[in-house]
Length: 264
Length: 264
Image 1 (spheres, rainbow over the protein chains, first blue to last red):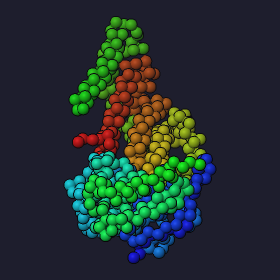
Image 2: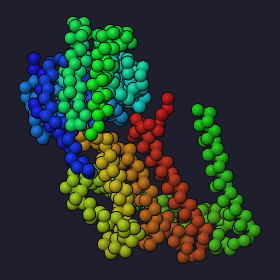
Image 3: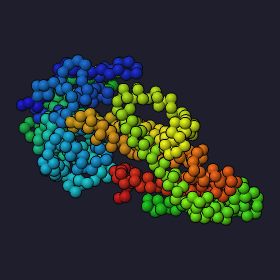
Image 4: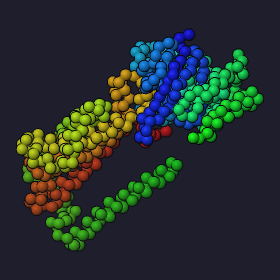
């Protein structure tokens, strides 16, 4: 199991115009291989910072982040990130957006086409290969963004509020789709959301973070509640009516709320 | 929505026709009622005679010679401005050291209006083609540099982060993300530069030339033939309009992914 992620004493601060902002403080955590980890917490608690650090977009001044035992030093396709605003290349078609990562990583053309075909079928966008992003709905664009990362077979998939820009119906569909897509390769997933429902539905474990500077407030193991058969494989609107779901949902919401309402 | 769109373009065409039409009618009335002297404002019929004169070879110079003189010099200077200005703007935006070296020089040269370069251009390059190409180059390079610079600086940071996360190295980021992302802004700069190039070749020809539309205008003025001045100006206007239309067509063909080009 070489896909595990570990955070050792990670600290991050930004120099802003109004002085330094401490985004993360002594963040210590272990994520096991193929785990679906969801992070919730109040706005500005450093969730996104944590994800960007994990992606290798910048380096923490102190502490280390290890992926499969080696320290993350630069971004790369083994830890692909998916953003809230999709960040597709607007000048490229669906096909070319997905091809980009394969091509710059030196995958031969014949194999690229095979992979693209496979992943386009997986996300259900057959027939849209030659569409430009602007011609697609938000949900379809996010499918392409997921496919673009997923086609590179990342060991870790980092998702920064990926469904926040979608309407409620599309969000629900995409949550179920993500589970289906994830189960085909089972990369380790780090998923950030503001929706406690989304967190409880998708996660193996939910991390609740404190307000800034962000630390781990509490870890809730959802698999302990669901057992072997995780409820994310069931329809979302049915799962959210279950009593166990609602219990853990309100418990987590209470934890998040206490971090939002406490002001100093 | 389609109906409203059609109504709008109809209203636009009607109002445009009315505004241009009333100026033409006012012109015709003012001259045929002899409210102004023909030297100040030649009657439409005189202008037509002037046009035929030029078409058949005013002062024994065929019309196409004027056309070629102006167009060839303009295109020469314009091509140089693109070839030097666009890469310069891009590299200034991409590399801080280039920006710090070239930036101050540009800031000093930029406020000098292109016609102010004419005396120096003649001293340096003589009264032939080279001097005028230099004027056009100086004038057209400014929007090429500025828009290319802006285009690269305005690359959405998340597009760059996504690309890095997919495995892109710096040269890929520049050539496959920043430049295509900025291409619409670069193209707008090239279109502005085209207009400025055309204006400055005419300005240069007003001062020194033996052919070209600037020459025609100035020669009409020296011989007190205001109808020739009018024809020269009208030719400049029409050709400028035509070049802009051709450019817009090219721009649309090059940027099929733009939002303002929806055809579905």
